[in-house]
Image (cartoon, rainbow, N blue to C red; front, side, top):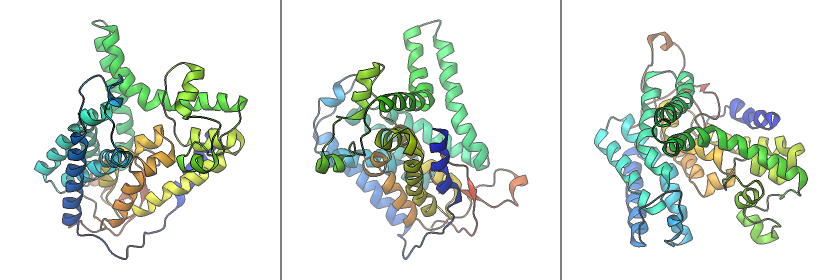
Length: 347
């Protein structure tokens, strides 16, 4: 799958077009509208009921909500909240930034997802790293620091409670690195011995053409008996859909789609891009691209980037880097930051 990964990176690294912005939205108005949407979605969710309990249990399935509301909830958590926090924190409007983090935690009784509980830690960490270091170093640190924290917590808790020690290791280290790698291995093995899906796992394709498989996560989990988890586009739109031989071609197409985010984010501050895509990158690593774009808000985030006026570099990490051009990227962590210039501040 090295060839598939490289094929996906090619359009992300070398697409350098500037976005055509026939019009932009006033930043203050956009922030106000998005904040109102977040509150409205939370109120609608709460009206159907809430649950408190173990995020690994079955309680999350006890409250039924309309499908469209579930989509809006996922988009709000995955795109709107990170975008708003990045906007408010970048303008040093700390009261609003803290309020957005508090709003994100308020979604926990709705979705019972541990990721929601980590948002108030993860987004400020990204903001701090990209404020203090140049983007390439900040990207490396944003990957390494959580792994060190997870391993440190595991070693600290292991003598006291082995079962408790597994929580930080599983939540951070395995989810960040182990699960995506394991998914690639299992999908490669399964679809080497079974027919490919020809993209029938995508809902709209399944609706018109049917599919010999159910949901891929439970299908793979039932065979290998080590959990039911989603997988990235390298495994789903790649290996599962077209097989190992053609997976690089599919990966290139997926990378070309993701490059739309790179184009939309041109002339935006690297810190703003990194923080606002803080959850989007995790989605790319753990769910199919079609799901990340349509159901979890990555496509909405690209649209918001496109509507955001160009920005100037907010913080100079070091005087040594003062003469270097600012960096921006599409999805943060997925590609190396690439140079760009000609920025102006958000109003």
